[in-house]
Length: 263
Image 1 (cartoon, rainbow, N blue to C red):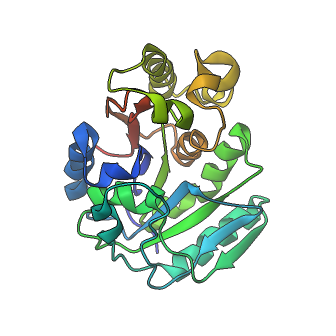
Image 2: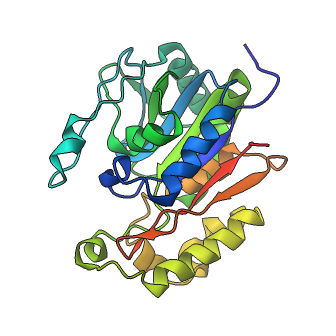
């Protein structure tokens, strides 16, 4: 069943797990989008915290809340995000990915990792939309991430909102060492990406490791940046893109996010 309006696409910087209880300036912006989701039927989330050899699609009917982190405040381990799953739509996502040339399997017991439920805690605060995840293959690169998003794009016509959850900057070593003062390199990298995304310069973002300032420092590994390219692939040229300026937390974690398809 198709809808008259395509469901939106978001790239959300989920930051540290504490984002659930410390919403900062991004959390309020995500909550403000909630009233605009009336036509959304379900949410597909891609998170770097579920990586597999081949693509896996979650068909769990009632996914548990996974607390896949350690050393954080006790209250985080008590939070639950009780959304239902969407097995039929998950199978349709698998079909589309297979059609695009990806090897796909199913996982009927997978829960929602913190890359999924933490941003949804703010975006869909009532947990009243079905949610399913699609894993990221460990071999995914920037160009194939765009193709990955393109393969899923037609789900938007069925009311499936695509949430690609990652981080605008993700250097865990510096996160553990940093103070509260924002580091210049994180802001310079974020500004470069902002210019490219708002200009819809997908090819530049694909080549970010050679073109963006401080790219290797901002992302020693690719997995938290690839969701941005998945989101850009799922969006189309007609979609307006909205900047969600999340600022920089812990000195080095840029929470900059983007939304496509909102009026």
